Structure formats: C-alpha cells, structure tokens
Amino acid sequence: MSHPHPELDLPAPLAPGALRIVPLGGLGEVGRNMAVLEFGGKLLIIDCGVLFPEDSQPGVDLILPDFSYIEDRMDQVEAIVLTHGHEDHIGAVPYLLRLRRDVPIVGSKLSLAFLAAKLKEHRITPELREVAEEQRLSMGPFDLEFVAVNHSIPDALAVMVRTPAGSVLHTGDFKMDQLPLDSRITDLRAFARLGEEGVDLFMTDSTNAEVPGFTTSERDIGPVLDSVFGQADGRIVVASFSSHVHRVQQVLDAAHAHGRRVALVGRSMVRNMTIASELGYLNVPDGVLIDIKKIGDVPEDRMVLMCTGSQGEPMAALSRIANRDHRVSVGPGDTVILASSLIPGNENAVFRIINGLIRLGAKVVHQANARVHVSGHASAGELLYVYNIVRPRNVMPVHGEIRHLVANGALAVKTGVSPERVVLAEDGVVVDLVDGRARIAGAVPCGYVYVDGSSVGGVTDAELKDRRILGEEGFITIFAVVDSSSGQVVAGPHLQARGVAEGEDRLAMIVPEITKALTEAAAGGNADVHQLQQVIRRVVGRFASSKLRRRPMIIPVVVES
Image 1 (cartoon, rainbow, N blue to C red):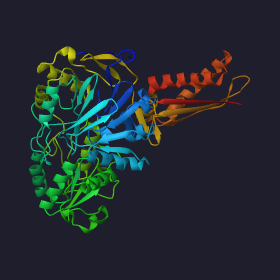
Image 2 (spheres, rainbow, N blue to C red; image 1 turned 90 degrees about the vertical axis):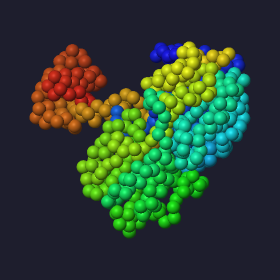
Image 3 (cartoon, rainbow, N blue to C red; image 1 turned 30 degrees about the horizontal axis):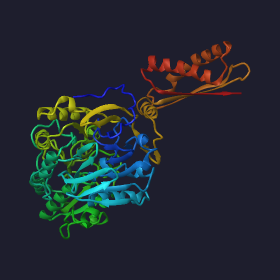
Image 4 (tube, one colour; image 1 turned 60 degrees about the vertical axis):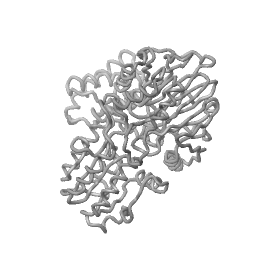
C-alpha cells in the first residue's frame, strides 16, 4: 500500500486525459468530508462537510475544509454532489457558496431539503438538482450515476463518476443493514453491475474498518428502547443527532406504545424533523408530538424530550440540561438516553455530561450499558463483501482516521487488490488516475479553517495555543513607565494576574528583579520599548517557571514618559 509522505511537493500540472482526486477533508479525521475530482480543466466536488471542535480548540464553533485549493477556480466547478444529509457532509456548503453562489448542488430529496433550510439561514438561494437512485446525470465531463445505500439517515446515495480517464465509485457513508427501518437496502446488485463494467478507483467508507463482522441492524434497537421506556418512572430525555430520522422514528414509536408525548428540543432538531415529516420520511403517530412550551401540561411520567447534544456540544440542549442552564430540568426518577455513538475526540465532553446528569440523580442509558445505538457504517465483514462484489482496480479508503484508512486498505488487499493499487492518502494529498493506475502525485496545502462566531478563517493555530495557555496557565500583566531619555523606571512595575493561584504578595517578589533588569538594559543602551518589554517577559518567565512551576501568558506593557 502506498503511503503519503509528509514532505510531498506540489503536484505537477494534470496530464491531458488524466483524472485527479484531491481530498480536502475526511481523510485522517471523522468529519469534514470533501473530495475534489478534476478532469479537462473542470471540477466536481463530492460532499462538503464540517468537523466539530475538540477540547483543545476552545472557542471554535466549526472546522471547515480548506478551500484555498479551489477558491480561484470556482468558475470551473460543475457541481457539488451530496451523498447524504449529515452535517459532516453538508455543513460547510454555505461557506463554500460564499465563493460562488450559483454552483449546482446535486443530491437526494432529503439531503437537499436539509441543506436548503440551512442555506436559508445564510440567506443563500441555491441551485438544487434532485436525483434518486438508478438515475444518471451529466455535469460537464462527469457522467454521474447514483446508487441507493443504507446509512443512519434516509436517502443516502453512492455515486459512480465516469470520465474519459476512468471511473470512480464513491460510496459515501454506508452499511449493509438487511432489515432497515425504511426497507431501503444498499443496492448490491448495482454495485455488482458497476463492478462488471469496471471500477477504476473505489473510494469507500472506512469508519468501521477495524470492527469485525457486520454492523447490527437498526431494528435491534426498537426492543431495547421499548424496555427502557417500560421501566422508566419519570421523564425520559433522548439525545441524538438532529438529522437521525430513524432514531427519532423509533423514539416516537416507543412513546406512542407507552402512552407518552414527545417534544422536540433544539432548533436543528425541530427544523430537520419538520422537514422529514413533511417529505414523508418520518411517520408521526397522531397526538404524540407536542410543542416544547406545553410540556408543563403533561405529567412527567408521560413525557419524552427528544433533543440534540449527544456529542457533548456545549451549547446543545443536553449539555445545557446537565448544567442546569435550560428550561428543561432532570432529577431523580428521570431517564436520559444517549442514542448515538461517540465520535472520536468527543469522549471527554460526553463523559462530563453523563457524570453531570448522574449527579443530578438521573439514570443515564448509553451505548456502553445498553444497545441504544448502532453504527451507520459498514464493518469489516461488509467491506469485504463489497470489495468482492465490485472488484475494483484501485482502492482509496476515505472517511476515517489514519487507523481506519489503514485497516480498510488491508481489507482490500485480503480480497486480492494488489498492495501497490491501494492508495492511503490524507487531506491534501493529490492522487492521479492515469492509464488505469492511481498514484500519489503530490500534495496541496490543506489546513483547518476555524469558524469562530462571525469569523471564518480568522483564528489560527497560534491563537488557539494562546487560548489554551490562558485557560490552563492564566496570564500576568506587567505595567511600567520609563523615562524616554534615560530609560530609567519612573513608575511601576505593577503586576496583575488572572488564573494564577499564587497571590499578589508572591508575585511582588519579582518586582525588584524587573526594576533591576530594566535599569541594566537602559544602562546598556537598550531603551527601545519593544526591547524593554522582552526584558520583562524573560525575567517574569524565568520566575514563573522556576518558582511557580507555571507557564502563564506574560503581557508586558512599557510606556515612555
């Protein structure tokens, strides 16, 4: 298997008649999925999603793919193809459309409906082209054919992209549930037909490649939820992704069976489930749904709250409930169900919420102690099946961390794909398909783009490091006034500290040393304000490190008089 090298150069210009694939997200992480295909000077984008921040990225709301590779070529983009409607596949589309608003967006009915509602909030009117399984569509030099796949959201599609340079089959996120709730199974007959035609490059979901066997059916969750509902004495709170239509359907059905009412909590949950219901993807039993404002009219033992926040997002409903910062409260006798899997990187945030809910007296049911969620991704057994059916000439694992991509590549090799034809790429690594062979051709810059409030791309890794230092070590400010002609200290230095446990009396110990260092610097001819600030920073830094065992942010301010 070919591995990307960390020192890859920029790729050479694409050879005539060749196809280039550039992943701008989703390879090396779970989220931010985006791939760019290039042929004949035209571009096709498959998915454009977001990644949710970890604890090490304080203040960040979302993480976007890096659009710098295509921002000057948006006029060459033929279309954005969406495989399904999850945030990690559609969430960054509004930000991409800021570069060009009239890019055609191709996807299934539900995917486009979820996206259109999101774009409305960004005041963007998109050009949408609805497609369905077994349908073909040409966008410039790209001939597209769509295949039904089963996932944790209805209406998911794989896409076969045919070009004169070869064909690419992109699975999107998928699994092979044989008894899905909506009876829409992954179309293995279509995969086999495409395999017979010839798949030059197979880009396949890697998220569960390390998990042996087959992913559990969604239907197995129904009896578990029914049992939990039957045993619950008080209010039930269920947390899930706001786009997980199947899970919400199971909660509605369980509530109806046990004579409970359901209120949707969270703006995105209400928006998405309203859309799913209007389009016929969600069947709401009569009399079950009520408005959140009317939950006080229903006895607590008859009430179910369906909310967001299963990944520990600080502003989502469940986190606010756990922190007693929400109109909904939980306590002894209440049951909270976390009906989703843990996304890597979110573990600590989720466990904090679980602990907070248990501290309030609630019973918490989650994946570790009950089967209240199953994955939406194919496990190793399913991937082996698909490799044997498709028989691709080249394989490029996508959607997953490095360990997932490597495990997926190893599965491909087991089914007979030559190791030289398994390309393990990361974000920004360029892969060219030339004469039926996929090879790494170089790499393009591809960093994280942070959304922080109204700022997009304004926050850098260096600034995030400063935020972590402020949060973990605190800061010390030092103010001094020096004579502009002699450089002598005429006022101060005055110290103030925040987030530093040691009192001001302890910090006052360093004042004589600062004064001495400034005087010596002035005597040596270093009267420049910037140089004096550096002198203060060094003295205080040494003191904090040796005496306080801390590395706070040090902010010296020197004013000339």
